[in-house]
Length: 214
Image 1 (cartoon, helix red, strand yellow):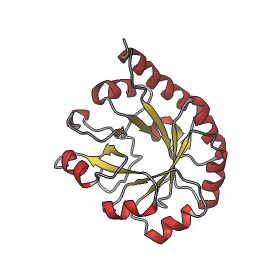
Image 2 (tube, rainbow, N blue to C red):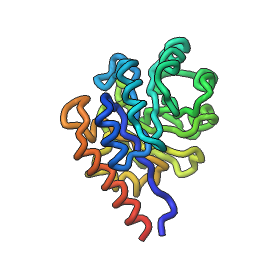
Image 3 (spheres, rainbow, N blue to C red):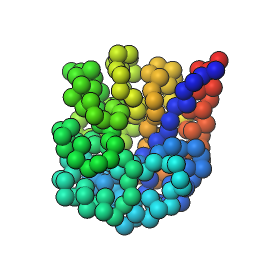
Image 4 (cartoon, rainbow, N blue to C red):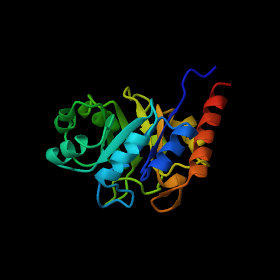
């Protein structure tokens, strides 16, 4: 029997209805994007309504890209986030300042030493591994070479980057991550989440776990 259930995060949620749909489909976490340049960015008051709609035991994660401390604290004063996710050049000392668990996003590609990243961000709850796309901070719909993830990593891995219902099973078999994170792979149009695709994605994750359990 497989002892591990792969957790699922649906990122880029922009309305309460879809947050509830994700939770009902079996998502363990939803992501709210506070990066204005993203097509999935959400305004603070909308984020507040989304977070209030999320049922118990589903973590609300706030995604930031090089936001200053005052800006993050202002959002935390309005939106009940359970975890932070940093995608920019924030140093670990900055990420530690907010009294919440946090995830460090790492864009995987040539020249990126994940063992070194793990040591530098040792207080992170997990490393989120995404594709390295020039000028982009995530949500690109681009997968990366999963063989670049070393088995020696001791921090939990959240696997992201171009995942969808069709490839997430192979990704889980290749990397054996703690969790998977999806955004564009469950959209009907850029920035528009689709409840049926979310359900299909979660079902594919559960199928992969069941197969791994023999």
